[in-house]
Image 1 (cartoon, rainbow, N blue to C red):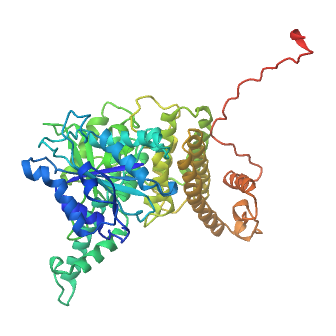
Image 2 (image 1 turned 120 degrees about the vertical axis):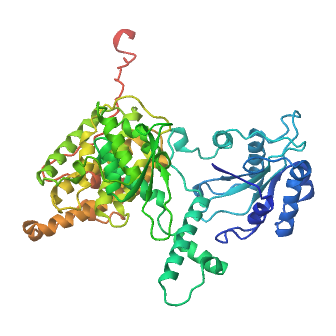
Image 3 (image 1 turned 90 degrees about the horizontal axis):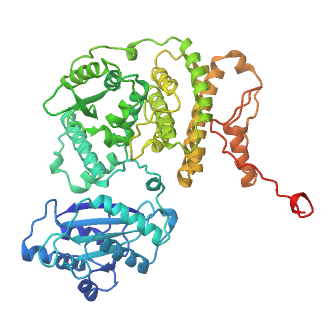
Length: 573
């Protein structure tokens, strides 16, 4: 169950939205499922309209209006509790029980008679556009006696309470919270604000270039503005694209200075965050995509893009040298001032075609060494996932004009690297081969060389994906393991098949060879589920002629079998 908490100061606006049609006409039969005592006495479970919504808002706002208590950030506390679509729908009685327990655990009740309670309501209006059953809880943070409810650390407390309610009511528990990992979600308000900014800039740009007279953005009818905003909502979000480029640059870089230069070469605006009173000590960074004419850049911190992209975590992957910090500070300063790079390095050099075969061999050796890493070593496997996602991200940045299969596969693998805590332990596997691979594929668009070696590298990336899948599955993250198996692996296989076609087209001997049907090309729909899974496994591990592939994941150890003597044998006879 996912709680989403927001704050505001317009109770009437919130209530009219909850009983209205919604952004996509998804609101159906809005009605109350729970609330404070007086409210539930006056209102029943009938469908709510605008008049009843305004009456409920007046009831909730009365303590605030009577005492005039001001609450920083707004007195309206709004939380939505949402289930996965696969869980189905709960009854109104079950939602009422969950809402009352949630409000009580958040401390908005009377604390067993020791405090004045808050006024609150829980509204249900059908499933979301994604099929998620959910309710909305609105609370007035001004209590009945004019005091303010404590909301310190309310986001974290809401998450903890949701985890407890999952266990109590037998709901699906959030895997990422159990395994202490989480990706940054997209707030609908964030997406709409970005889409509105892009739509306004695009309209004004078209208006200045058009010979015909066009009204300004503020003079457009509301329906026209919403249509333009909706069109922008269907495009990729800036944060997703920025995370892809930053992750690829980080993995391809061998030090912090090169990281700064690669981000700038990828077309990003880079802004360091200096320590107080210093210009030579960088504690963090922000990036933004270069805006189009009339738009403003949208800045995101490294930690906002992904937990593994915060600067302290990235620095743990780079070697600590005597001059590394000072050299990096110069590159940060140049980026901040808009100057040229101070010391251009590997990112500007031409790639020797022989490096493809060398890196492919190194990557193969690294993947084979993963057999020595136990499945219980989450820290090492998180690093493997992060570096693998970085290789795919660098490959995508270099070869895909628009985010495609490589980008989506990178985003999926990066979820395993989004851990809550930063590990200080040294990795048990040398990640330099993955970093070197990322550096190499980052230049794949220049020269077009090494298709055969790229194909070999993609096979090793498939083995890495299989390794992450098996570790995640053994760790009990069933849903995420299914996502890797059904989505990420499929995308990597698509790229592998494209590389096979490219190699065949560039090799006359291969092009004239008779076509053979591989496991990946056979129709498996007639097989039973067990046989289909076996065939899929063979497709993922399909070796070259005369070659035997082995999974890089170490096989789990089995306890030794102890022979139990029969009754008529041994000492017990």
